[in-house]
Image (cartoon, rainbow, N blue to C red; front, side, top):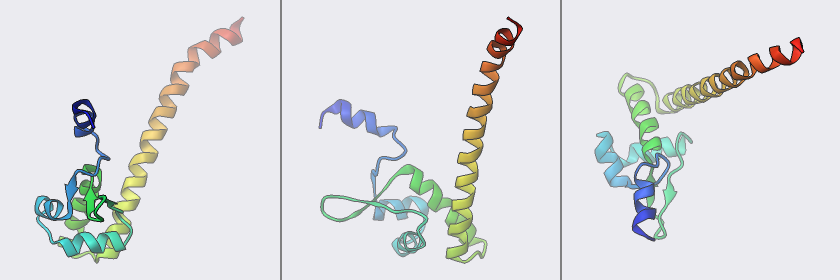
Length: 116
């Protein structure tokens, strides 16, 4: 792996850069919490060649939101479902915005073609 490969991954939200211990420290939670949200299928950590769990920044954001809900009294399973639905809604809104932008950009060309 070259230095350019490593530098290219530093800003990659999906790169599994964090060990379970480091992820738990960053979130201020326990490793068992990370295992629990994995069992609830909120996140599926990637595995290192040695079999250790590795988490990405994207996964840590989801885990942090789940922890926030659990700290407010929401059961882990319900918190994970809420986070999944929030994430799906965010993605759907992004796709809709892209679609609206693409349709809006093509509208003047259609008007010119219809007028001809």
